[in-house]
Image 1: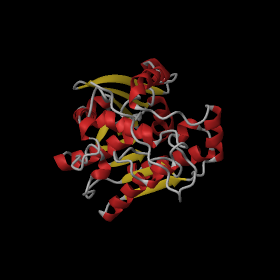
Image 2 (image 1 turned 60 degrees about the horizontal axis):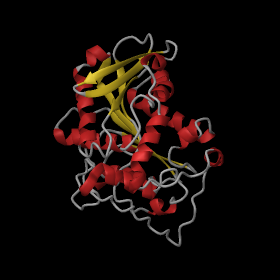
Image 3 (image 1 turned 90 degrees about the vertical axis):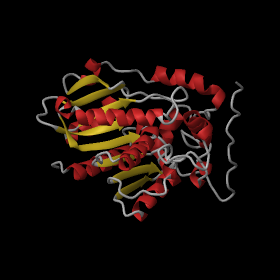
Length: 333
């Protein structure tokens, strides 16, 4: 079959200027050689090979980090789940079902776990369950979403074995994983499943249409631009991409009903492609009577906290996420 043509890059609006970029983020981006070239369909296979090579999978011993954590790998009815919890923690802990980023075309459950354990699990006394969902284009919608639901149902059914509290499971994810977490919350609501305690959505990938002002403004400036985003969505949705009747479980921004969802924490950078779709989603949650907390980090590009993890902005963002989870879970300060 012939290759899909490269996705169009919308011309910038004459009233849009290059977004302000945080000084430390800009320095870190420059040190890495600047903004990466956009991802196009003809380069997808090559990109996936590079992505796999630069995201090594730590062993369980490495995940244990010198005895600081207990780590294990589980077969969750055919879906791999990697878990970690603070070593020596007693009783059933709250759990974070974490869905990794990577545009639905990259990433893995193992590489993200050390940071999530260090930043969230240890200070809050959480178990993290990181899901190895299948990637596009080999696995298109709804396969990744259904894998995440399978992992959640398995975790709830095996709460005793995992030493987690099934009534205190929070959906969480970054970028593509944030979009999957939002979609999973919708799917669980509509399917009559027990509701998770909350949803932690970090720069979530929510809208396949890419028609926002921020998508145009960030073109050529963000680490994940509109061309790359369209390439990823096309790989993930195939012929469903851009169709008017796309199910909201495929792209949560398409939902016309955001009522009855668990409390949400949303964050996004002011200088990233996803800014407008994330802020619109928060507004839609509020309009539906929902409980949502939104943070727009000034001058942050996509993945700013990975790009410059020790920057003042990254430390502030980590503290805000931790504080929200602490309040949600009722953890001691």
